[in-house]
Length: 71
Image (cartoon, rainbow, N blue to C red):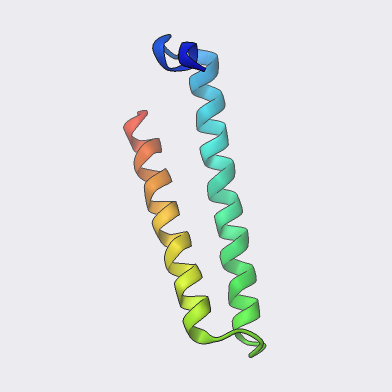
């Protein structure tokens, strides 16, 4: 594991990391859409849904900042 942090990233590992971040963004969008659907059903509290959406928003912003930093 130590080698992972001491060796500089290659073009291949950088591209893979970017692909994983972009996949995570797609998953966040899918989760957000599902939460929107669930919010109209009344099975979950508004507080719980808002909290989960806030966590998704924070995760998305963090990922977007990391992607911008790689440019």
